Length: 462
Image (cartoon, rainbow, N blue to C red; front, side, top):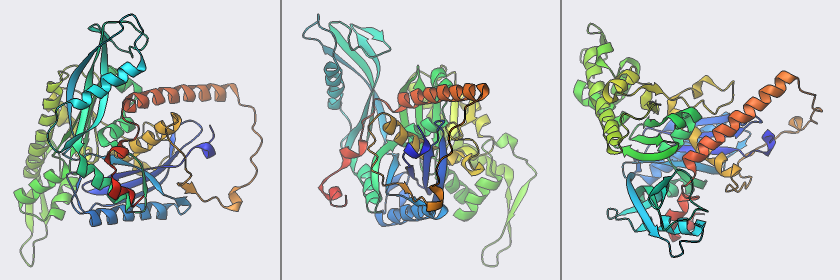
C-alpha cells in the first residue's frame, strides 16, 4: 500500500509531567514516518489522574499547537489517547461453562458467553471493568493455546486477565480531549501502547516485562507464551524521585529535577564519593554544596522501591524467574543513569532500555530515540492496527494540505534489481511479523474502550 493511501494517525500522551502529541504515517515498507511532534509541560494532572480540567485542556491545546507549528501542512482533528493512573488495577480469574450439547462444535457465541460471564466478577465499589482479556482456554480441563472454536467437549473454560479502573477518572480524560476541539478515536491502556512501541516479535516469544517509568505512575505489562499475562500501575515514578530530592536536600523542585536529570544515578555504587554540585543560594544566602553520593542514595532508594513493586507483581503471577527476555525499561524515568544495573540487581532478571524505534522508518530524528515517547508511538501503532483490521473509519479529519507544486505526475516505475526485490521481500516479511506481534498485544481488548465511558453530558460536546 502506498503512503498516500495510509491515514495520518496522531497519538496523544497526557502524562503527569508532560503532554505529547505525535503525528505519524506508515510508508510503503510498513514503517512509521514521524510527521510532527508537539510537547509541553503538563498541568492539572497528578499521578495520571485529571485534577483540574481547565489546566489539562490548556496543556492539550498547547501540545497540539506545537505539533501543528512544527508541520503547518497538518490538520489534526482526531487522536488516540493513552490512559493510566493509579486507579487502574488488574486481577486474574478463571471461568468455566458447561455445554448443553456436547456433540456439537464449540461456537464463537459460546466463547462470547464465557467472556460475558466474567462481567459478574466482584470488583471494588466505584470501579468498572475496562477490559476482559482471555488467556489460556480449556476444553474438558485440557489446555489449548488457540481458540477452541470447532472443538468438542463437555465443558469450556479459560483464564482471564481483567483490567479495572475508576469510571469518572477515565471519563474526565475523554472530556478534556473533546473540549480541546478534538475527537477521541479510542482510549488505549498506556502499558500496552508502550509495549507495542518497544517490543520485538522475539521479545514476545521469549517473555518480557515492560516497565514504563513515567512522571506520575509506573506502568507495567507482562507477556509470556505470546500473550498478555498481567498489567499493573504502580503509583510511584519520576515525580516521587524529584520530591524526595526536594525534601531530602532542601532545594527547590526545579533544582531537584535538574539535579536528577543532569547529575543523578539510580545506583549509588556508581556515584563518586568526592564529587559535589554547587547550586546558588536563595535571596543572598551562600551557595549550597550537594554531595553526588547523597543525591544517588536518595534516587536509588525510591527507584528500588519501584523495582520492588515490579518484582512483587512478577511473583504474584509466578514469572519472576521465567521471563527469558527480561525487563524492558521505558518511559522518561528509564533515562536515569545505571538504572539497568539496579534493575538487574533487584529483580535478578536481565534488563535493557526500550527505545521506541522498533517500528520507525530509518532516518527519523535522533530526538525520537528517547524512551519518553514510547507511549505516543504505541498509540499510533494501535491506530494502524485498527486500520489494518477494518475497525478504523478513516474520516479524513487528519490531513496534509498538499500544495500544487507537490501534485506533479509520478514517474513510471522502473524494474527492480534482484537485490532490491530481495530487500523488499525481507521488509514485507518483517512487516508481517510486526503486525502479528501488535495484534497479539491489542487483540482481545474491547474495540472501543471510550464508548464505555460516554454519557449524555459527553455527547453534548461531540
